[in-house]
Length: 415
Image (cartoon, rainbow, N blue to C red; front, side):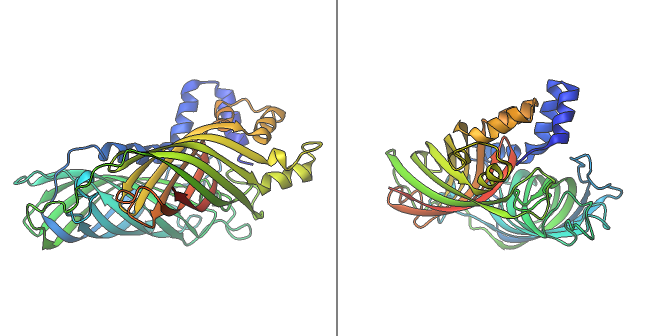
């Protein structure tokens, strides 16, 4: 039930605020970095490159972070290769200019993780947005890159044959990357690229164990420009901002395997049924804020209450949770990046379990109060051009103070 007894004991023994901050950053740093970087990028003044299409080939090394006491030994440097096919967004859509004409890439990567016997190898495919500062007539340029996709691992946890790999519990996981790149233009066709990045993989508590892969990396590569960008392209759509407040409804289905980050394994997958009602308002052509209430029923919590006789009565009622949520969306045409956080208004089971188990860690106490979510949505109609009467669907990772709770997908309607 999202219980991490070892970490709790470490925090309790240390008794230090700085120890807690270190643990929190270690577990949630990737998510915070992604969200904060995108926020800055949406308002940064960036300059575009001259290419229209390009291929980038690179390689580098890194070292996995041992972020759990029973994590496998990391006895070698991880070696990772990558290839990107990139296309510059040059202004034929209304939202391109508001993100200062970013570069979209299909980003394939893969390699070792520093312990081939226990961790094996991985390969992944991600969608990437790159925001490069490249002033005219200057050879040097730089910018951040943000990626999200999926990865395949050759040697995940197996109770019989590989029970020491607590990092990766399933063959397929989410894969994310946050990167800062610096480049040098050799000529009109070729760029040299240097990169500092972090790779993160997790299955969002869908299957245990789920400690995850966190790997800082340094790498380099060469970018070959396939075609040139036309100069002085102008955006084709300029429309006024709809400032009205819209009402939204959403329903979703979540799934997780109940337990801590590492146990128990091979348990059943429980459904979680969610519904939410919220108000939304566009504050710029690419920024939307939301405020609402959401509730969900957790079948795994209900089964635990009944099997353990946790309450004398009202097991179903105690299996619900309700939260008030404040959120934000970065709008990109039909797509959006969703982030939100809030406070639990009703969360009886986890609060009572915290008290009965006498868990005193700061993080344990905050987890029963602070939910959050990171996800992606697709709108049936352009979200900026059609801010009302619009269907949307999405996939999200629900967390409690940054610790994965469950994976969910759902549909909604903006009235």
